Amino acid sequence: MAKKRPQTKGKPHAQAQRTSGEIPVVGAREPCPCGSGRRYKACHGREAAHAVTELVQRPFEGLPNECDWVALRELVPAATVELPLKGGLPQGVPSVTLATVLPMAWPALRRDDGSVLLGLQNDTSSGDLSRDLADTLRRALAAEPGTAVAAERVTGEGPRLQDLLDADGAFEPVVHTGFEFWIANDDSASTPEIAASLERANAAAIATVKLSGVEAAYWCETPEKNHLRWVMPHAEERLLDALARLHAAGESSLGEGTRLVGSFRAHGLMVPVWDLPTSMAASDIEKPAVEFAERLARALAAQEPLTAEERRARGGLTNRQVTLS
Image 1 (cartoon, rainbow, N blue to C red):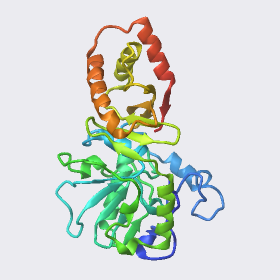
Image 2 (spheres, helix red, strand yellow; image 1 turned 90 degrees about the vertical axis):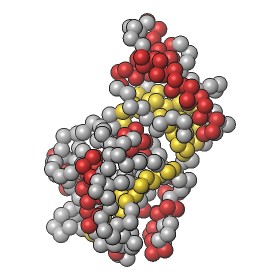
Image 3 (spheres, rainbow, N blue to C red; image 1 turned 135 degrees about the vertical axis):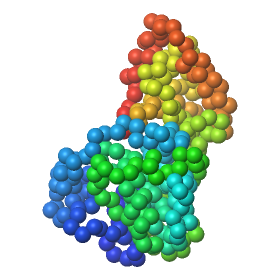
């Protein structure tokens, strides 16, 4: 979605600043910025790949609303969240906002008014997404207003998001129908490059709604059918057992015409997915989702071994898992 990289000409916040002598991180299949003509993954990206830190399976663990962090990273096209910082906002920074995607895939942006936008769905250079995002955030806070922040390779040292964000602060995602928030209240952001990026991003986005009755569940609309994608905090093996118990008992659906079809793995958590009829709107699934959460809680509390039928159901669910990250 809108993977075009920052332009090299134009206004200060229509370009990312490159650290002298360093090769910035770009998409694996994009031309290497060094000018070799090879793809990044076959050139300087190979060196970066060898230098990555050990993969952190749950980079958002310990943050408020870990499940929503995973959803915004992997599932939700357009959303924003106000981020509270430890010790409050620095002078001259009126707000820090997490955004799923920024124009031209910028990692971060310091707007003309000093506010900071931090992009979540960007390629990262190490095995610790939390450390990469924290590094980008720190550089954005120190950047000049009206400046886009480039990607950089991150070492295994330095703070993580858990060190920078206020764990007691609210984390309340706002899902948008499009990416107009890029230019809201910022007339200087209305450049031709950003307008083109906005048009591409809006064309690729699918309608998505966050359910209000349960945590981290997102309804989305596609041409063939609708879906519910629900990020859950439970340990994978325990959750698979519980889902298998419900599936074997015929209690895994969310109502007539719905079906639990499998799950994603993303950043150490499981994301069960249901197919829904095209006629089923987000508001229609609110009550069934709450009722399912109650059934799941009972199944999670069960201690007896799985029956033969439940083991077969579990095997089917396991075979329909897809790993996103």
